[in-house]
Length: 264
View 1 (cartoon, rainbow, N blue to C red):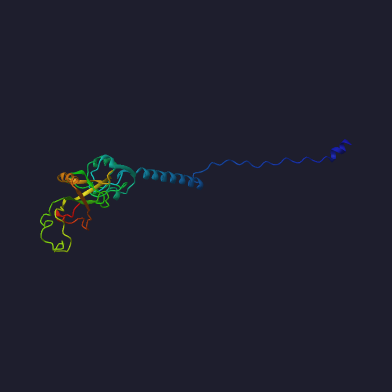
View 2: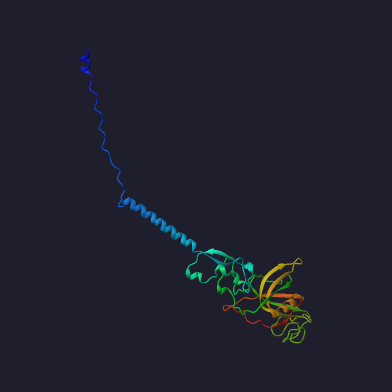
């Protein structure tokens, strides 16, 4: 029985055959994927260096901190600097930040807006005459709309004065109706006074409203006109005329220095 049982036992299955071992091959430099990866790294480095160099090329430039009118004499707080990158042609027109201190005391030849880059053409020559800032009191209603940098003529009224070079107020030259025979306009009353040109083509700087309702305007005037501005402020009446420049930048002749007035 034992032999029979041994005879009928099924034979055990043979163990699986192991696959042949594969050696790990060393990656060669000629592998295209490796070459593409190295190329991408090199391109990234070059582009990054280029961008860094471009960003680093920005410089400091002089700009106006606020609106500055023509004729303004620059003080330390008027100018500041900003960082910007300008091309070669543009950068030659403007002042670098390192020169901001050199511009103190210079006179502007044109208005400069807040944040605007400052160029050499914005300034008047060194031979520009010195000026003074003088306040003048003007009664309410006798002041036109003005902005900093506008130029004006200043007239003062002198009661009882007669117009120079013309027919004195209340003398012959009018008809029986009290009109002027030359143009039909009403002749000034006796003792009405005259308007006298005190200042011509001076710069308006700023205005302050007084408690009385009058206005105090600050004018930039030549040194020899400062005393005239002070005297105008103390007169009985000041009239302000805004000047409009023509295509060539002129304001024309000042006209008569004295003309008949019509009262206060």
